Structures are given as structure tokens and as C-alpha cells.
Length: 192
Image (cartoon, rainbow, N blue to C red):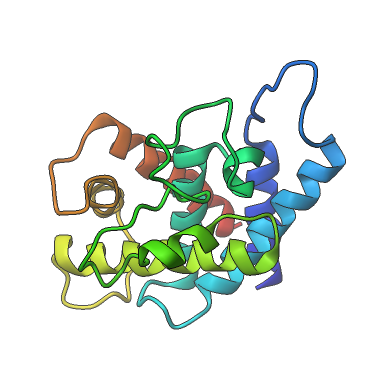
């Protein structure tokens, strides 16, 4: 687990930081500590029993989706209004930009939705856990596999990312392929 954490953290730290202008919400050191929390939670959740993926696939999926959905933005993580975007007009929460959807067992209720955002370990864990359950639900519906022992392919990741963005199995777009490429880069780093 320590090697996965070190690799995941290195990838997160190398991600282009959001430019906030003259008054950033955190110092570089504070950003590094926050990214360490995110990587640590992602690894912990990846090793839970929430999904049937290989833990390295789970960790890479979580970080790739977080990077593409929120750019690991401080304000998005904290649950505040972000200068980088409107967060689906206030409907999305946390680094995974999670929505509520009545009747969907993989998504939170409206009440639980508010608890997904926050800079503390508990909120970050709630967000990553919800993300992984949602990703796993889409994988089981949209990817045709007899078993989940082999690592995810880029095509499978793109299908999962497409469903994550729409809420149902759907056609793969360029943005989903970009998420798959990020996943592959993270996953390759986890193999070193």
C-alpha cells in the first residue's frame, strides 16, 4: 500500500495546480498536505471492499476522475464556490463532482449529498467511497466481463467514465478517452 500511496501522491503533486491569481487559498505546502490526504484516502478506499476492481485500478480510477472532474481544486474539495467553474450550477459536490439522483442506489440522498464536500478526512473518504461505488456500479452494467481479475483496459475505463458522466451506459466521447489516458498514466506509475 505504501508504494501505491507514494506513486499516487507523486502523480497528484505533478498535476498542474489551479491558478488563483494573487490570492491563492493555500500555500504550496498546504496544497501538498491536502493532496497527500486525497492520495491517502484514495488508496484506503481502493483497498476496501466497495468494488471488485484490483486496488491499483481503483486508486488510478479515483484520482483520474478527480483530476478531470475538479482539477483537485481547493474550493471544490472544501464545498465552496470555485473560481474554476459553477459545479453544474451547484448540483455537484466534492472532488468527484457527485450529483444526487433519486432512486439510484450508488448515489447519495439529497441530505447525504451535502456531507460529501469538506477538507477533512471523513468528508474526503465519503466522497471517494461514493465515487468508487458509483464507478463499480457502472462497470458492472456497461463493461461486459466474466470476471474482474485482469487490469482494466483503456476502452473499459472510457466506457466507465462515459457512464460516470451521464448516469447510464453511453457512447464514449473524447473527454472519456482523456480520462482513460490519465488513468493509464497513473496506472503505469503504480507498476514501477
